Every structure is written in C-alpha cells, then in structure tokens.
Image (cartoon, rainbow, N blue to C red; front, side):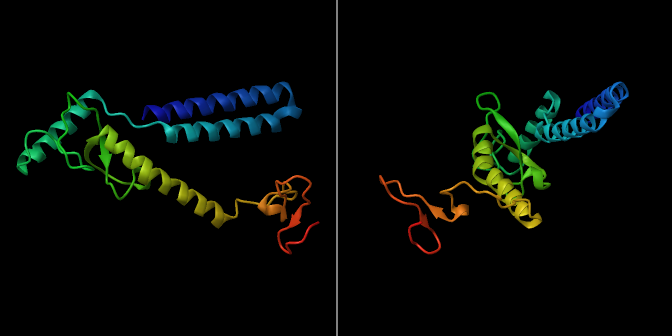
Length: 180
C-alpha cells in the first residue's frame, strides 16, 4: 500500500512540476510532458521491481504454520522446503516465502510455503527468470516490436555481408557466396 501511495505522490509532483515549467516557458511544455511520462513509466517499472517484504510477525506466522503442517504430516518439528524437501532450521539457515514451483509469482502464483533462500533463488534463476524473458521475447515478436535496422552494420547477419578475418580477404555476399 505504501508503494502505491509513493507512486501517486511522485506522479502528482511530476505533473505539478510540468505545469509550473510549462507556464514559465510555454514552448517547452511538450518536452516537459514527455519527461513526465517517461518518469512515470520509470516509476511504474521500479514499483514492479520492489519486492514485497514480510513483516517480522508475518514471517513468524508463516514459519509457525509451515512447522505445524510438517508436524501434522509426521515430518518433524521443522518446516519443510517446498523445493528440495529438506527441513528448514529458521535459526541456522535463511529462508524466503516460496510460491508454487510451477507457476511463478509474476504469473499469479500463490504462496505455497517456505523454501531455503538458496533453493528459492536457484529455482528463480533456472526456471522463473528464463520463463519471464521468453514470454517477453515472444510478446515483442508478436506485437512487432523488433524493427529491422534500415542500415545494418556491415558484417552482421542482417547486412547479408560476411567479412572474413583472414588478411586481404574480400567481403562475401551471404546469399550467393561470391566475393563482392
């Protein structure tokens, strides 16, 4: 809730600054409006990167509820990591809240328990992050966000020219395979 309030206050401040600046110099109002929109986008993306932190009491409640689940299942007094399946000693090892291992948090995955910090981060690096970037690449391809360069750098695949590394070699056309 505090992050939303911070976002709104910052947005209002930027709009107020844009209005004051545009009143002083009307010709620059379009530039300032672009600046405000860019900053709002930056603020919004920063809000997405801010991680939700559990308070101390919330962490204690989550740890105790997971320990109670482990006791009910007859797995001991310590909660069980939902990624590797080994017990978590809350005093000796660091832990994080863990989401459904198959559905990441950014796709709406619910908190399913706790996991060792090392297990959770390893799972994030091997599963969640590559999945996030793949969906981003697929979306960019789908909406046509990748425009071809009008003047590609010579020697790149997009240019169609191959530049050999050997001395005194002439460039080669990739399509025909003949020297240029």
